[in-house]
Image 1 (tube, rainbow, N blue to C red):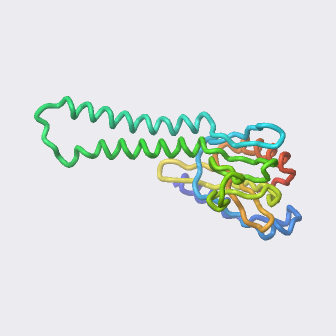
Image 2: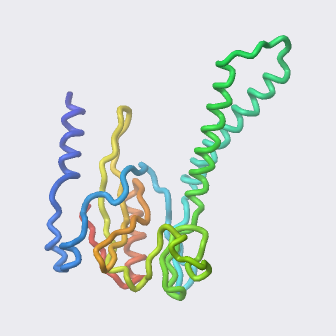
Image 3: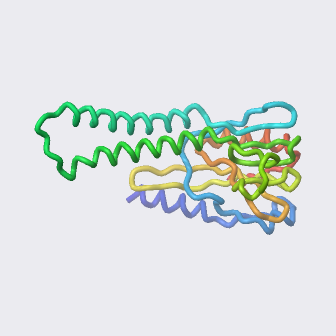
Length: 219
């Protein structure tokens, strides 16, 4: 009972009205203050790395990459192990439940591959190129820039927004913290979303200095 009350209070805190007037900026008044991306993690997924005077990148943390590899290894282990079992078993008649290990192994392998690919995908701020983007394609090297799903011109970035989101399920609950870009047209782009607030704030400060923009922190 007390746990349910605690969760209700935390959800109420998340839904509290944000007073954007504290930032004394008309763009803040027209900006959304709810989560830009639902869900999150309870550990650090990315860290900011300076690659020179004109470029910084968020790179996947070791923990995030290992997390994805574990999923993939479990899936591959199940596929290989059950395949060996099937090939060495004699007089084994096929039954429908036999495909379940293959389904389980395939799902874990694909999920692990997706996590690993997401963790290793570049998240780039490059002032020499004039762009922020997510992914392995440089906006200056593509024929149609709209083929890059997440991108923005650096000079259109107005502020960095830090928000919290209460994530919960039947077995766990935690806060995940978003670092979003606020553009001059009031639109937002989610950059990272993870559970280590102190590290996220450190990265936000470094990024704000790099871009020359303010931080709107409402956590």
